[in-house]
Length: 54
Image (cartoon, rainbow, N blue to C red):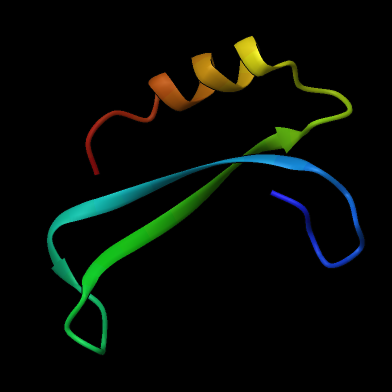
């Protein structure tokens, strides 16, 4: 993901099972995994894997 400043960062987007947002759509949550300049793709995958079910 590219932020407003132009910095690249890794995120993982998950859907919270059984939860809805205020419009009634499935609730999606973004978790930051770190900046792309300091976190490798493999590290980002490992961090995402540790999140578990939401």
